[in-house]
Length: 263
Ligand SMILES: NC(=O)c1ccc[n+]([C@@H]2O[C@H](COP(=O)([O-])OP(=O)(O)OC[C@H]3O[C@@H](n4cnc5c(N)ncnc54)[C@H](OP(=O)(O)O)[C@@H]3O)[C@@H](O)[C@H]2O)c1
Image (tube, rainbow, N blue to C red; front, side, top):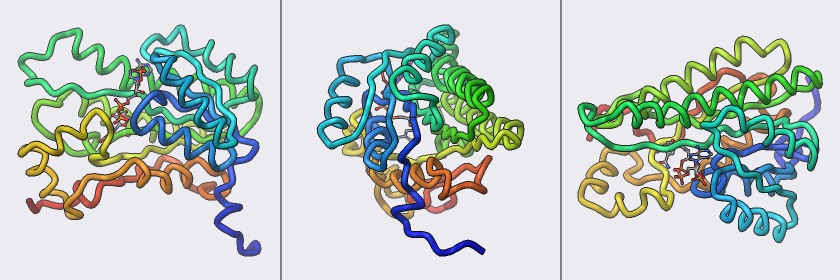
């Protein structure tokens, strides 16, 4: 057995280069700041470059290192260029947070072919292409890495009027397991975080409505989460020393919502 280790050492990300997709708002914004605060150089990617530039400045002002890169993850052909930019600035990407995604509530009979394809293109195809690009480069460089896919408890449970989102997140969970098994021998770990409801600018108004409050009462902790409450699980999965034996896991952070039948 090795000597005891301090938390500050086990979660230290110095020497790591992290790419966070969907970093221009919500959870991705927080993930990027958390990784940078713990020593990683972060490449922040999304379509809204102005917002990424603001985040880049914020991280730099806090003493971290960041690079904003415009990226539409649904456009597979654009992904290698984002990795090239990351490598040029900071070196090989060793941590990927596949966070870009969206959900649209619509009765299934009204979902168009474009709605379906659009959801899959970002929530599942994008995760696949970004992971594949990262894995190819890690294998070529013979380096270990950590891929963290942001799924949802809706990847395991179901709810009305969200069928495409649910199917895409279920796909993310199975993709996580498939890649974990295939690339374990290359020391590439692939895990997923399955958040429950977390307050972001997109949904904060909803949770003040009657429907939102009703939904909250079904969560054992009787509240939704704050983005900061994913910091611990993110750092655990990102840090090679903290999670060296963890791959193919789906870590739920949902205040107990997904395991109860009560409401
Ligand atoms: N908040 C929750 O309660 C919750 C719960 C479970 C799972 N999740 C998952 O967590 C992730 C983040 O959600 P959030 O709540 O933080 O939502 P959000 O605030 O709407 O953030 C979504 C991010 O994805 C980016 N994005 C969307 N389409 C993109 C594309 N084609 N290419 C690149 N980036 C794209 C957006 O940036 P641009 O518009 O600038 O491209 C934005 O930065 C999603 O995968 C979501 O499914 C969230």
